[in-house]
Image 1: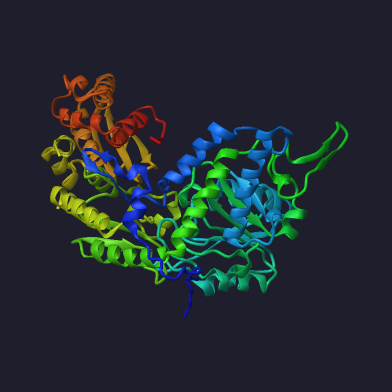
Image 2: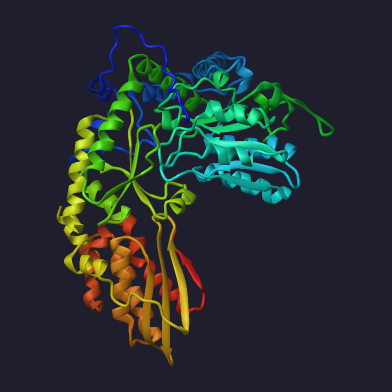
Length: 420
Length: 149
């Protein structure tokens, strides 16, 4: 029996989570789609952005725009302060030990590629093994495949059961003397499953195997503490956490990052350059070549501050209740099968209908203003595991309500009307 | 809902539920696999030739209503036609489903295939409607596979 504790963040007394107030913070929610109010249920793909984030972006370009870490002029200093200030917000958010452990990247995908092509390239050799799981997003499969092909190493995949729960005894069997790294998702994007990370990491560390975590789907729904988890690397993206696209974080333990070769070469990642020898910069800058995505990093910090406020008001409990309601309502439709029924899940309801292909479902509900994702969700092996070509997926964010679930269910009745 | 009715016409729903020529073929002269990785549509097409004419054509696979119905109706439309005639039909069909508006979507020369004219209002579904046609082209050109991502 696996017990997962959804660690609740500190809750501020007397504050309650109010989705209606939240909704008014997101300008896009007042628009219409095909003449109907927008019901946005594709949050696992990307979340919408609150006004504070949009304003932070605009404010940066209106008031602060300048290059960081270089100029002695005022704007450059102010831009640097805001950019590094956001890094501190992000550090505190995941409870990293130091700023050296918080590396800005384009997103989760780049973070995984960074680890594969630096830590992986240095530590994985011929005959070695990298272990992943059957529920990974393509971005946590392909970088390891590339690495293993290049090095003559072997990629091994831990299975899951019919509910979409990772089979821990099977995973444990795969962790052997040749395993150089375990890389897995904290939460499955296609199924919503929360993996018992703490337990898995202990299992790997008992065998001296480091663990990389794809946290893209976890950070918007769970309180993540990298020290409590004791993970070696943790990656997440801003755009799924109510921030802008094109920015994310790779957390890595300083001791590991220090030993890793650089990822990309260029400006900012060096201390001095001559044609004979280059001395690399200190962490985290060593992994941040080139002018960074300054505006989006600053706005990412704002998004995290906004998200933390909602967590303190009870967001996570609210999301759990909404997931229960959605599971019950969608599950009651005739001919429906919910894919991913693990005990511990975040707000994702992936499903198929007997009468209609997911792609047709997507088109019909879209006409009702309901935005869901249909397809393989960049997790084709997951679809294969359940022997289905695709699913329809409703995924929830902080601004979703029971009314949104009801709109989804009404639109699904239309699908059944057309195809039933 | 008027747009939706254009897309999911009765004929299309009928072909989706009971696709014609939905079978495998033993010893086909030509065949090809078609995939639309974005939504998971997948079909295998088999062709029997008689000189330069398509004598018989059938398919297996699964996909959305639009892709299934399109494959089903295509098999009916191309049987007995020369490769050149099939190509002409494909061009007409392609022009119709990729038209910028329903007013510009000409169904002339397409006969029953005109039911797919509503697809042009749903740009993301064009690949579903044209998958079987691209796959047929791949089969006739002996290319083996075709992907419409």
